[in-house]
Length: 199
Ligand code: MN
Image 1: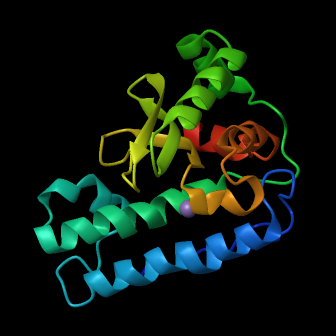
Image 2: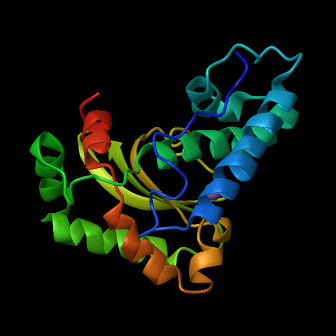
């Protein structure tokens, strides 16, 4: 299995209320593409060439050291960016409905409380990483991971994620990560996140 960079379902300038065209373009064609290329290079000629990305991340800790570090960083980077770019839209609704909304209300009290908790985690995470909403058994949890560590390796099902590496926002926001986090809600594709939850 040669890993590939997925196309985006929107143009690079479509999410301007969140991030600018230049950032989106560099993020997708340079950063994300770079993780894909490095992952393929690592796996080439090994026993893991045909293993799916999800299985690589699930079984990360059983991989030989040389493959493990690259799968952690580049496989995690690839998986996290597929989820991130695939969870954004320029014409979404402003909150989830149905079973996902019910689960959020059950786990966090209300949609507003969930948003506050997610923002707090994303704003306070130290250094590069990701903020997540994940499914853990029957519960939902918000937490963050370092580098490109994936919730899949932790045994969770990822639903929603926000890239909090500086490369995701620095051109538009510089040090104002808080504004970037708050603008994220304008472009979340809740329909897609509902589908992930119900899958
Ligand atoms: Mn990124």
